[in-house]
Amino acid sequence: DQQVKQNSPSLSVQEGRISILNCDYTNSMFDYFLWYKKYPAEGPTFLISISSIKDKNEDGRFTVFLNKSAKHLSLHIVPSQPGDSAVYFCAAIPKSGSARQLTFGSGTQLTVLP
Amino acid sequence: GAGVSQSPRYKVAKRGQDVALRCDPISGHVSLFWYQQALGQGPEFLTYFQNEAQLDKSGLPSDRFFAERPEGSVSTLKIQRTQQEDSAVYLCASSSGPSGNTIYFGEGSWLTVV
Image (cartoon, rainbow over all chains, first blue to last red):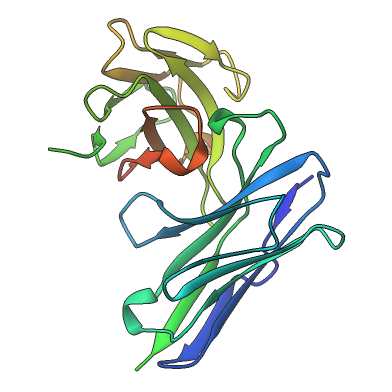
């Protein structure tokens, strides 16, 4: 049973527009959420995170929104750039957990068209 | 180099063969993680070391999988009597602490069992 779900395997967006990547989770014990970005033939790299005490965290062009009641989070990229084309993984850690308890979603391939 | 280094990058093994995958973490990182990533899926936790101690091996799929980190730096993941279902990317990650956003992934070892 997947505890972290990314239901869209792929997303295409025009350069300059907003990219919205979605993630749903089922485990109510999760309280820290992260997004990782992965280019082909490279390992995932940390992008942005959010704690359950917040509903928004912003870092430059990247903003993560958390809706705890809906068990849903989303990553917004504005404006999207061709270099943002990659696979984006949502991940979660339970309360009092640590990195060893990271649970990943299956990823969304973002393609930003020039 | 400054990042997590894994070798070999690519390995083709015949079914039944033993394989060993090596991970060189970032210097000074006490935490080391192994993940397995099947095609189209997110990384799944295999095992965790703090220095030389293997504190969690709950994700190892069978007793054919064995990991060690004898001196608290380099780690080896060994798979005995490989099966086709072992085909995956094996990702190593290290961190200086337990928080997920400080995990640094290597590029992965791509294992194909034929």
